[in-house]
Image (cartoon, rainbow, N blue to C red; front, side, top):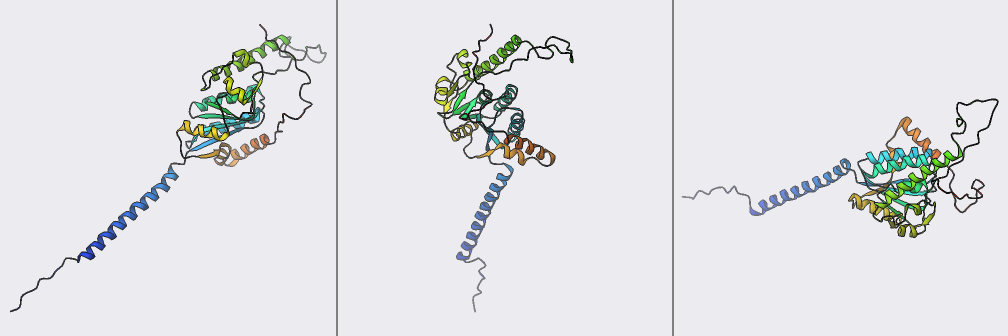
Length: 305
């Protein structure tokens, strides 16, 4: 009589171990794939943060105002631009254009950190634009300041047999005395804006208002001592500070002009390109060269009481 033998249906231990190991490997590969896919998806859906550079490299005028208006608006509305550095190298220029850009920079700094980096020269209206930033950096030899206003005098009223006017100043806009009073108002406005901004700066102003408003130009070392700037440093230092204020460790540095142009198409792009073409065609300034357009003498200006 033979014993009946049962059938063993359980898998050998080695086969069971191998199956479990394969399952674990597949599980790990799936997790790694998900992480890689998630990374690339996140970089697509959540762009890498950027520090935007806005250049003020010409005289302050209508074309610069138009270009900077578009760039500042773009920087304000671009979610990936977390902070802005103003790179300034300009002798100044139009008071009205300077005022417009100054107020726009103030509005920008209320939403995102703005650091001004003053290169070779930041004078007059260019300096006023700079003081609208959260902080100002300059090089030791940067030329900074020149807080003052230049205004032409009206032509004298003359009698004419060809034209008549409805008032004594219709042809001239006002008397010489009235123009001096207007000059005083603009001068005081410029001075007061610098004093107000720099008095609240990290390196507060240490000059009296009348000392600020003499039209003097200071080198960066002096400007730091007097509180006209906050730090001596390079443009890279200014970028690092902008990133610090924005809380960024990993970021790209981009030209806002390039980002703005890349967002345009069609007629808007063509219009913007024409604006930049005209702006780039403006003559460069050179403080070391002589110019027949510069005044040959200077008149002592004493403010009206």
